Length: 174
Image 1 (tube, one colour):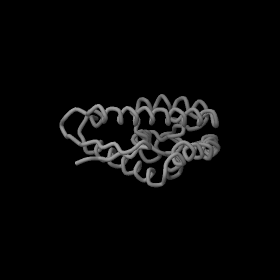
Image 2 (cartoon, helix red, strand yellow):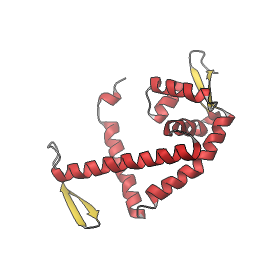
Image 3 (tube, rainbow, N blue to C red):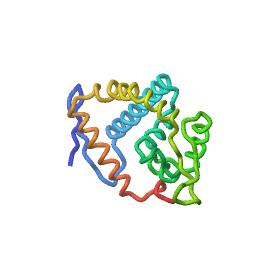
Image 4 (cartoon, rainbow, N blue to C red):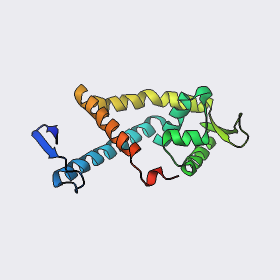
């Protein structure tokens, strides 16, 4: 079975060889993928911070809270939603709390837990950041690709996510 990658200079054919080490060409494609993804994320993060003074972590927290019912989530649920360890989230929430973007309250349904609540200032900051951030995503990602490439990127991401979700590994250990 072969996977075909179309490039401006022609077609690169990469043959899948399960159980073997990646070929030189597969490693080149992997490095290009990782380096480009890192550069894209760095540019988006820089623009987000420049436009709104929010970090990507702030934005992820605010997005999750904005999408949550009543603008609140249990800390453990928020950590799972954004894919962070609870200790990392706890430290980050402390910084966001000091800036007035969120507050922590005792859980209304369970006295043992805490909920993270979106504040008016947090909602306003998220609102100001969203349009410039979405424009940057359009400029740097969507407009750089053809509609077919965007669809292929979606397929690629879904395939990799399904593989990661199905595979046992250290990131799944609780």
